[in-house]
Length: 472
Image 1 (tube, rainbow, N blue to C red):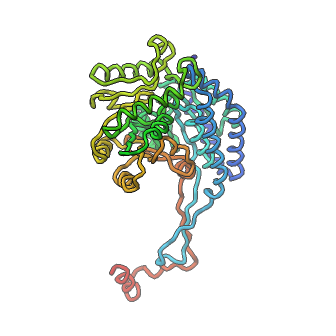
Image 2: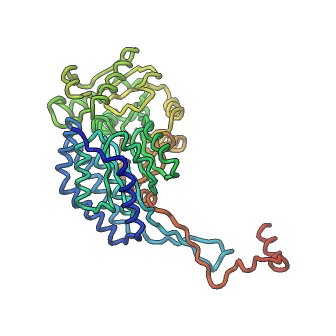
Image 3: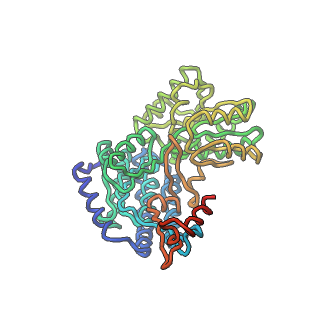
């Protein structure tokens, strides 16, 4: 399906309309709450249509996974925003030094103006509407650029938003890479991007001439460490849930496993049992999501075959005929053992259902393997030893961590979500997102009498003694 494209010269015009509306004055708590209620109601009504659009865009996308990841999660986030917004909007009193008494200090949270949102294709509703809802909660106008790789969903999102909001408060731009590049170069008050690290660099470069603040939600290779002695059946169940959802096309999906040497083969058996139980008829059943497009399918297939040609053991957990797999863009859950460290599968984010397993001799070896690589968006540890858990938390840096499970940290409304270094910058979800899309304006209120009146020239007598006392 061809996606209609917004003319490039229309992009700044639409931004100007949004900015003019934003500059008319701040939106009240009641207006923001009404925006969120309207968005929630419209999403709930249109969720079946959005699920059908995502299914058509992917060629087959699990309806239940769409309802969970692009429905339930977004509705929950909107509910969290509504529940806490009034408290977040209140000015916060701040402590001041006795030197400045009886003055007072506070922080006010003010809408930035117009927020640009560039959303990806892998969770096209969630990763568009959560930042959009959060920016609205903070009182901003929003300009959304959804992905061209999910054209039906992008069109459905545009129509959904136009049914709720006037176009001077929420606008949508459609189109391919040329539109995205021009969009990133617009002078927004804040630009929010979710996507790959490579494209994130381009977005940041495009925003730099305007000094546009950016939040980059990227990806990278998110490792799983299984500690010695952890129950492998439980680990396999939770790894399978995080890796196989959406066909592995998740930025925080487990990218590779670090496993004690003696436990590799039992884990392989446990993961195979999980895959076969979940997808008994993988080619005909509706529960296993396909790879989004031909380019992504061929990339994953080429990386898999490169690893195989260089001596890796490639173990499909479910057998699928090559012709059928190619026709449907279907790559079954697949383990890769003994892959060379310099092959693409081991160097770049996989973003698919291929899962390398790396054996280790000592727990510290696994920890060093993670620490020697880019800081990941997510880090997972399966371990019941509190000492080792604390050691990992203290000695590693990652965008987020989950202990004894995978991906569920993303769904916690009270936790900030974001990367670090190559996996991103800035964060959102809940209050963290509200602060991201707000200017935290410091305000100092001076009293009728100011203690600072004692500090003025000529610096003699009391003024001199006070200065010398305070710098003792």
